[in-house]
Image (cartoon, rainbow, N blue to C red; front, side, top):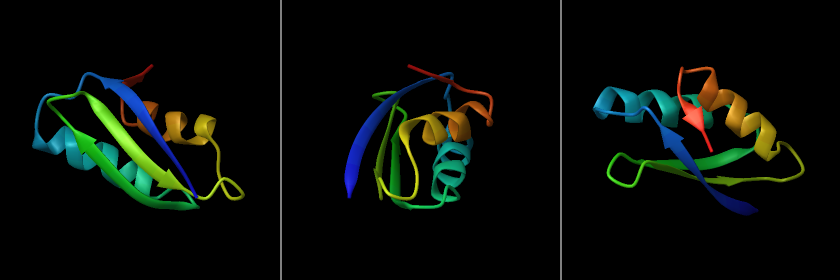
Length: 68
């Protein structure tokens, strides 16, 4: 298992938080996704043999948010 924290720009409310968490949790190999509106971050625990950082970023960007 690996853990990464992504900086996510554009989140402003609880719905944003749920959208990002939901998108990340749908990525095969993701065990857990926690989003912090205050810190503008998404911390993701995932299986490196099933997914990668690019797929995680793509999932967040697919919801309309910028990932750094």
